[in-house]
Image (cartoon, rainbow, N blue to C red; front, side):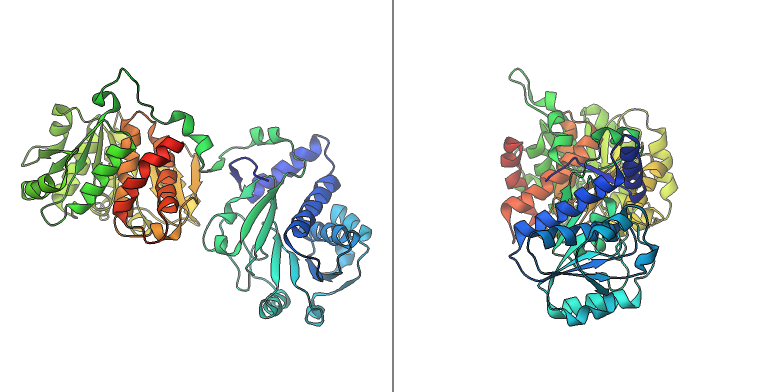
Length: 488
């Protein structure tokens, strides 16, 4: 089942549970629905075989007792392994333990039981710290036996807020969570241990989400597709904006060409590369639909005004130079929408406050920063995880921050955050980021609000990778954009 795109913190999930109970949904019903849902996924996905259920000392263990009962009643050979003192169970978890007809054994006896599947219901998303040695030993035994692990909520040892993992955290083939995904499901390093993530509706009313602040969203088309630029019959190219791309010199023209072509494909009505004198002949020989503007000593903000550039990209292969810094500051001081990438970020590593101060003075237009992790580290102090880091960076800089990675975090200065996991690993190739900067600029130029454009561009960028497949190079991304836009 696919539920809504909201991604919750562990604390927000606790709030949702509490509000559901206050609205009249008994806690035992939520737990029953959770355990029954996990059991249903197992029955659908695996053939009948001996199965071990690992139950911990809290509510996660309570879910496990429901799973054990459901599978036992369906005819599965089930054994429950317990970690912790069952006499200390309370509330709904105690009730489910008492209703479970399956015999229990200490977790330390797991080596005496041969099973093809184990259900990890030891610790949930709220776990912090280090897994106990007995738990690590149990998971090591399962790994040696090459049995499948189905995790309830999260694999035990994974922090549901940050994705941090304790040594010994197991790798699941399936993780079943409830109501909404948690942040840790999508953040490194924990996300690589999740396996397939499935969500269950356990009876929490949808309107409890209205009570939450600082929501994070899973980046998917439903959030932004209605805002995508659509060409009008009566329109002309400049209705869809004129985008400028600051290019590198003669031997560094490839990045700007990638950016320019992607901007044109993504929705800009016209695109011009702003070239230093040394690059003019190279750009001229390599570009057709993209126009050229030569920049000698002319300030960039003057070019922006004279050529009516509504969107400007600075950075791709521009060099970490004084000229790049001048161009970045001039772009920010203009009324254009601005995308700063690559060298336009690294050039401020010694004085990031200078950039942030300039952004703070910008009265018209937004600024989008697109750092990868190394560039991000040069500009910003790292926080506890990628979401906290990007959110703090957006607040500090006053810019939309797109922190690129296997999970890309897109943060608005107002605190809104979206996580993009829609990208294959082969997107990590030279020039891929230049293409992304172009798609963002093209969508903004076409009329999309910058934060939505950053979200949409990141998804389209990943979709281009999926469409092309392994072997993709950055030049291939542009070719996939038209079919993706058509499908959207």
